[in-house]
Image (tube, rainbow, N blue to C red; front, top):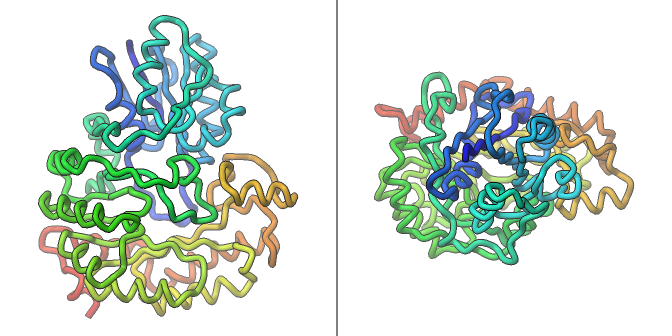
Length: 404
C-alpha cells in the first residue's frame, strides 16, 4: 500500500526565531511500518503538502493542540475522496470524541503494537473506529525512526542543519501541572535499549542532537548511560530536565552538553542555583518561561525579565499559560468557567484562552509580548542564538571565551 504520513502546520510563537524541528513521532510510525509498503512523510511546516494525491491510507499526527484544526481539515479533504484516514498523536488522543468525527480511525496513545495491525485492517477493508493499547509500550518496542524521510534541507537554518531528535526513554513522573505528557505517556519511566540508542546516535551524520526525553533527571543510572552513549558518538547535544548536581553537570559537559532547557514559573532560588551550576560547567541555559499562573499579577513581567537577566541565561522563551485539553489545568479552568473559548488553533501558548486570576487577558498577552521585547532589547535574540551556535561549530569560541 501507499502510506502517506502527514504532520499538519502549526503557528510559531510570534517573536520566536524561526527554525523547524523534524517530526520525530511520525518518523517513528514510519519505522513501525512493515516491509512491503511505500511510505512517504509530508511535513506541512517545512513545505506545502500535496492534498490532490490519492494514497491508499493517510496517517495524520497531531502532537500539539494548535495543530488540531488543520489536522481535521486535511483529514476531511482526504476522506471526501474516499481515502481512509487515521488520526493520532497527543492532541488527537486528548480530544478523541472530536477527532473521531474527522477520521475513519483514531489511535489513542502510543502507536507501537497498533500501526501494523491498522495497515492490515485497511488492506482487508475492516478498519476499526478506535485503536488503543491496554498498556504502555515497553522501551524495547520503540523502534528507530525512519530518518531517511527527514533528510531534506528544510530542517536547516540559514543553510545549517540544526539538530536531529533522539528519544531515549518515555514517561514522566514529575507531574508538572500544565503538562499533558504524564497522561499520554504515563508516569512510569520506560527506557529504550541503550544499545539501540547508541547505534542510532552513531548512524546520525549530524553532530548536533536534541535529546527529547521529558526528564532525563528521573533516572540517574539511565542518565549516566545516555551520557556515555553521547560521548562515544561524539555528539553535541541539548536536552531538558537534566540533573543539576555538580557531578552530573560535569558529566553532561564532558559528553558534549551544549545547553539545557529549564522551565521557569516563579522567581525561585532553585532555578538560579541550577543556572549557576550549568554555567560553572560550560553549559548554556534556555529559560522556558510560563506566564499567567494564578500567583502572577501585572508586575510579573518586569520582575521576570530582571530575574532572567540577573541569572544571565543565554536564551529565554516567553509563553502564556495554556490549559491544554487532557490536563488537570484544563478541567479545573473549564469547571470554574474560566475558559474563554475552545478554538484549538488559538491554544498555542501565545494567545490567552482563559481568564487569569489577577489580570485581564489583554494584560497577560501584552505583558508576554513586552517581556520578549524587553529581554532582547539590548541584545537581540538572533545575536544570542548565533553566539550559542558558535560554541559548537568547528573553530567556535567555546563557552568560557565567549563570556569573558
